[in-house]
Image 1 (cartoon, rainbow, N blue to C red):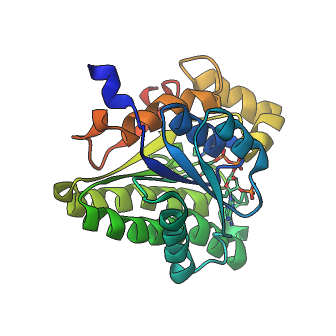
Image 2: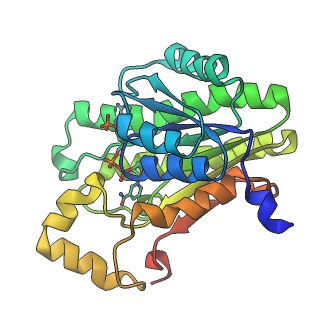
Image 3: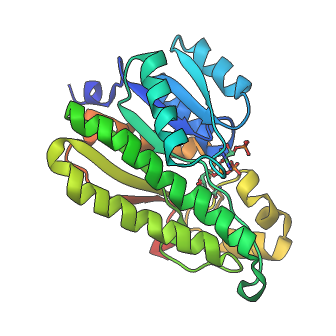
Length: 254
Ligand code: NAP
């Protein structure tokens, strides 16, 4: 039956930044679909872990700071998941940061930090997880893009550059790995109410301009992204490769 192909029983997923915001929703969605979870977070993701445990799934915390962890530490993080949960089937590269400033005033430090967390760490984790998945003959990688994968945004040049690159990376990896049964795709959330967008929602002019342009007539919530991540992680998406799927209330259609 088609709905059975969305089940993730027996699979193991790792979600970066699974402690709050969209990452917590992705982790919950995967757990509710049957997967055990590794949460790669800087601090102990107690609240999300407790909610996952309540579903009956196993959950472990893999500590790492993506701003400072290099390729070797990230490869070790992937190994830790295999040691503690037995395998790794699904990687969700969710953690990300944004730094808002006029392009003429962005500091080199802010530029580097955005690139390190939003792009470099994504590649290193894709590579480490991808090696395992290629050797085993299958797996799912879901990167997190943005509306600023398609648009330039305002006062967020580093973030837009990194999120454009996430789409390029996703497609490049899909081209190389699809034939080996490793599906690499991305989800592009629209304007979602999380800490990431709190400054926008606190600015009455920007907040109104954004909601006025969303055909659905409201900001998104993390729960609005739960279905797409389960789909991309599941057998139902077995022929989906290199896609960047907007979940944006129609923002890009406007
Ligand atoms: P958020 O609420 O600000 O959460 C960001 C997450 O990333 C947190 O779990 C945070 O962990 C983690 N993180 C940041 N820096 C890290 C680091 N150095 N090491 C490890 N973890 C780190 O943001 P969000 O809205 O949920 O965004 C999640 C993803 O969706 C990001 O990639 C973002 O760019 C993308 N996105 C969001 C929106 C939106 O409208 N909200 C739209 C498009 C795309 P800590 O709790 O330790 O800080």
